[in-house]
Length: 139
Image (cartoon, rainbow, N blue to C red; front, side, top):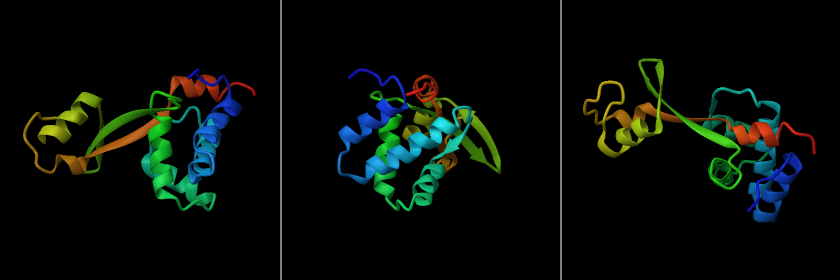
């Protein structure tokens, strides 16, 4: 599949792929949000649920599906980031540290075993470089 060249093409990809499903409306709402927030540095997962609810789209599964799709290889409009939060202090970590935390209960800051570490790792998103090119261009 060739990458979309602009926002209209990105919407068309969603419309074609998810035809007749709530993912189309949720995806279009998220693409609209991204196109207005291309300089965002930290978009928590909860923001996507808020975007859907603002449009009266109470479709949690659709939000999960679309965020997964938009952060995947096909459209790749969202880039993932990870943070470790403890005692109200957030520290950015890389994907290997996040994986070690989940797979082996390793605290990414100390390297020590921490059986509660999974509750301290959070994913966030930013518009990818592809999003900045695709959503920043005119239709």
